[in-house]
Structures are given as structure tokens and as C-alpha cells.
Image 1 (cartoon, rainbow, N blue to C red):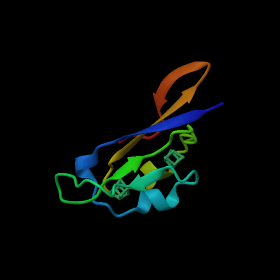
Image 2: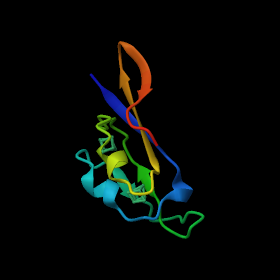
Image 3: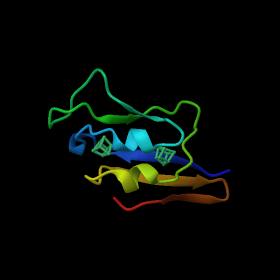
Length: 84
Ligand code: SF4
Ligand code: SF4
């Protein structure tokens, strides 16, 4: 089964929520407790059940190229799914 994870350059996030809205697995959440270097509440990956599929919709949607998605396949090593 293919799974994914997301690397987030938090200090570049402007908190627009576009990625969180497009995520079909609802695993991207806006921080409620911290601000980044730009003064925004950054997005976080909250995926304790491993629901991220690595679809990369979030990375494609982000206007500031904050997200890099990695897909994992049990038969292969992790590989970038979308360029940051
Ligand atoms: S890769 Fe897909 S499933 Fe994973 S966080 Fe991004 S939009 Fe959601
Ligand atoms: S789309 Fe990009 S800038 Fe907007 S909240 Fe998501 S990571 Fe941050």
C-alpha cells in the first residue's frame, strides 16, 4: 500500500489554509498554538493513523512552495512525489 508524508518549511507558510482544504485525508491542520517567523500560524501534518496517501494535492495547491510530499511503497525506498 502506498503511503505518504509531507515535509513542511514552516517559516515560509503564510497560513492561507489552501493545502488543508484540498487534502482528501484531512491530515493537514493549522497550528493553534504557535506562530512562525513570518507571524502566521503554520500548517502541520497531523496524521497519527498514517492516512496520508502521498497524493501531492497539497503541494500542488500551495502558492508558496512550502510542502514537499514523499511517497512510501513497501517495495521501494521513499521518493519525492512533488518538487518543492
Ligand atoms: S499528500 Fe495528499 S493526503 Fe497527504 S497531506 Fe497532502 S493532500 Fe493530504
Ligand atoms: S497552502 Fe502553503 S502557504 Fe498556505 S497554509 Fe498551506 S503550506 Fe501554508
